[in-house]
Length: 94
Image (cartoon, rainbow, N blue to C red):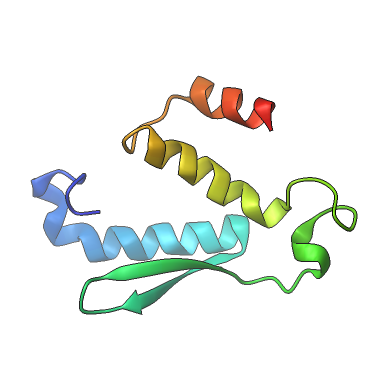
């Protein structure tokens, strides 16, 4: 993540990550968990214990808990910067 953050913000990265994590948790009920502290590897973990992984009907539809992962995936594929139109185009295809 530090590779895509401007060097003037590297000293503030820990605070930026902490605040972003708090907002993601509040908005999407997904927590940021450090997997490996030596390489600073993180994982997003659902804080909800939803039946059917959050789908509306058993086996039907995109899990609502997976929406964040889908949007983050679009951003990642677009080299960490996706236009809103790109995100909507991908979501509409789903």
